[in-house]
Amino acid sequence: MEHDEDSDVAVTEAPPEVSEPPKYAVVLLNDDYTTMEFVILVLQKYFKKSSDEAHAIMLKIHHEGRGTAGIYSHEIAETKANQVVTHAKVKGFPLQCIVELTGGGKV
Image 1 (cartoon, rainbow, N blue to C red):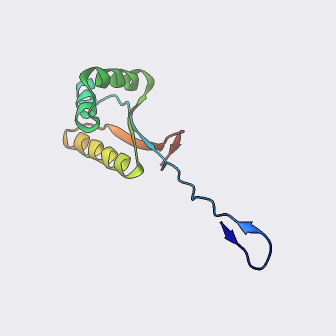
Image 2: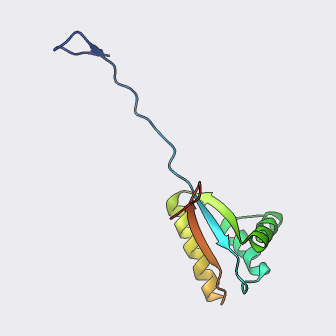
Image 3: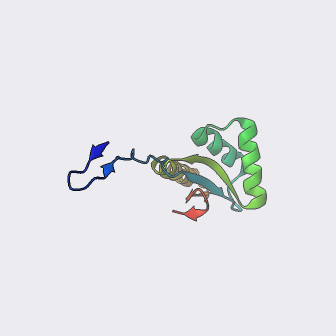
């Protein structure tokens, strides 16, 4: 605690506020050409999902049009999305992957 010499007021410095950095969801989008097997492979390879987890996410993508593969910091989410899209293109699939700020806002 410091004492301000110009007045009779004691000044206490508050500790700096520390907040968690925002998190971003990597979302895979359904299309009519990418195989279910390829989506499962991507979820296992890039998002370290078990076979059961990958299958469940793939079904969500297939039935609902989209599914979250993982939630990460911005840099990691962008890297993973780019890896997925690049790998899909190399294999001849139009699989799309987007990054969204958790809470729904697209980046």
